[in-house]
Image (cartoon, rainbow, N blue to C red; front, side, top):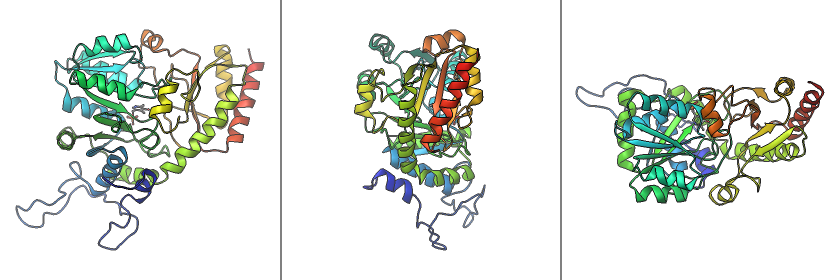
Length: 388
Ligand SMILES: *Cc1c(COP(=O)(O)O)cnc(C)c1O
């Protein structure tokens, strides 16, 4: 553990650690294997699936930022989730997940449960009765995603962790939407934090990666064993790029939020915008919880497009500064249509159940000049209004 503040840890990770040439920036180790110093003498690193200095530097940094005891950097966020359920759950164990979680999370848990690997229940975790009923079944793990994707719903991590502890259940939080700078799940009582580092942590949309961080050192060690066993670990080159991205996390998050505020203010005065989903809005479910448990509201937002499906298509097509793409958290702004994109793995019924309508659009507000972003939205709304 370090006594440094988060922005400092993000910037200084691995700096001045090269004892051979005293390089300020840590070198990248692309090697797959390492020489044994002598017959029978096992070195600190012997094979890069099990351990690699570049990947370990990133794992230690992310673990420190989240206040964990150890972490494993994986090939993607999905691999981190799969690693946790593989290491932790057997056929009789139950995992309770939010009904409006990331589409790939839903697909992973649902598919593996259907195969008999473990049991899963998807519940509306903001519904106290539904949550209590699920907890009464003594699950082994609760999966929390807050703010959730794509409706940025917020649940109270502290309360959920207290309720989970009462039935001996572990808690994992997907912290992808906020990063450790804006939310610290382990400090709020969680046992595990998962990130798709593909998003804000790398922040430049040029790496797919993930991390699983544990609060407990013994469990962290056991999970690192599993990561090697099933081959979940990430590539050194990806770790190097993610370390590079991580150094600017604090200023990026600040600017993402500033730009998000500008876009939100504009959207609130648009005729073709229905309900807006963002934790900063006093009308948003969980606004008070977000104010308490988050250090910022983040820059992910969704809204209902108040027009025909044809007008929605014109709007999306005419945008020049919001690329129509999945993913989020990069320097460039993106727009997604969850129903046909990120959440298409969910059945129509599951989408309705999670509140994902066909008029829902999700924005990842990037780091362009906010005046240009607002002007771009404005011209696309005008063209959409003229279309039929
Ligand atoms: C993208 C994402 C994931 C999955 O991560 P990958 O890196 O794409 O495997 C999980 N959770 C959330 C909230 C995400 O946005």
